[in-house]
Length: 338
Image 1 (cartoon, helix red, strand yellow):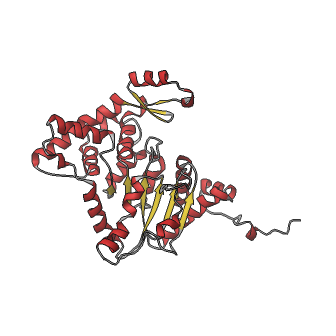
Image 2 (cartoon, helix red, strand yellow):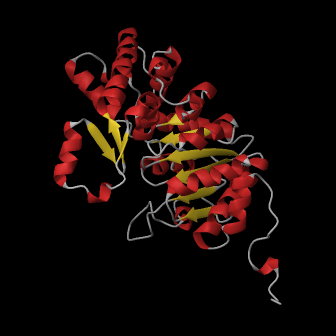
Image 3 (cartoon, rainbow, N blue to C red):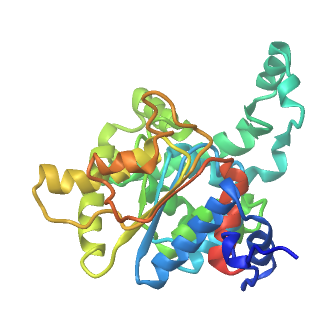
């Protein structure tokens, strides 16, 4: 008989929650698998302690259809703020209105340059194994976006990129094109909750390019009709101070890049540049396949953020070095009790 007790294995055999949680907690006991469970447990503990959570979206998580679990996280108030790239903002809506026209390329690693050219000629833009159809997704959305942009421009009003998306969703003009159940769209869920979003570097997106073209054509007269990244930071500074008066805010980062780098800086900006006493981020987790390397912030271990005044010595910190398309839904499932 083994003399090793369950207490020495690092994980107790008895678990609660739904079938997904029970499976994961039984099988995911070591290494990145154990880090995944620790991160989920820390997420739940943060919420149960009265904390709020920001989720950041990099990569192509919307095209990976993260909305299947992310939308429910929003509906159940497990997320209170999202920072997202412009690509993830728009690609969730692309999928909403053009899902049936997407094409999956399971053998994408074998494609030749000539194969890629043929996809281009069919107006299929490839993201790993998934092709986004230009006509049914991008151009369809462009027509509706152009209307809300020009209406605001003529009225002398300015809005953030995500606010224009909320206007498009609320107008009902997209409904005729829905090709998935809207409950699986995280943007629809965010719109229904009027969830605050941060979209740094929105200009680096398909709709951002289309907006620039509309300005060049003269259809939008004031280039500042869409509000800027600096205005997002000033909004975030006010939001952070407000929400942390009676709570604390954690950060759950999916991928790297500007979606995470931009909002985390609000804390050192407030107390170093504004000399305002603020709380540090109260929880931090990053799921990334970017391994630690020379000068890579996306692959930096969380402790490096202590030196920049973003996290504290005692902040719960987790890093899952794996594929977010696999790990994020499993963590969300545990937080949701699935």
